[in-house]
Image (tube, rainbow, N blue to C red):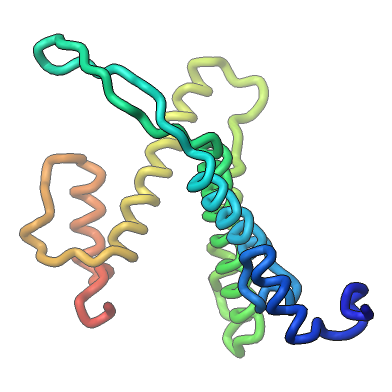
Length: 199
C-alpha cells in the first residue's frame, strides 16, 4: 500500500477503481493538482449533485395583461455554491495563465528589455489597488472615484479593441460614448485593432 503514502505510483488497477468510485479522470490521481483542477473536480461533483437533487416547485408569473399563471420552477440546491465556484474558477484560471506568461517571459532573452509584461501587470495592479488618500473631503473622494471609473472604462474599451476582432469599420456605432469614439479613432490611427489575419 506504498502508493497511499505517495512512495510509489498508484497501480493501474487501483487507478481504474478510484476513477470509477469518484467519477474522476485517472490523470488527476497521478499528479499534484493546481487550483484550477481542484475547482474543476468540485464543480463536476456539484453538477452531479444538482442533477440528482434538483426539484420542481410551484411558482407564479404575471403576464402583460395582469393575469397570474402557475408554473413549475426547477430549484437547484447547489446553484449559489456552483456560481461562487465558477467565479473562483475564472479567477484561478487567470492567475494560472498569468503565472505561465510571466515565467515564460522571465526565461526569454529579451526579458530585461524596457516595459515588459511584468511591468505592465505591476502598473495595472497598482492602479486597481489604489485608494483615495486619507484626509480628503467627501466631495474630493467622490471626484476621485468617478475618475477611477472613467480610467477603468477606458482600459476595458482598449482591451476590447486589442482582443476582439471588429469585422468592419462601418459597424462601429458612433456617438454612443465620446470616450469610445476617441479611443476608436486612436487605435485605428495607429493600426491597433485586431485584424482577420490574426485570428
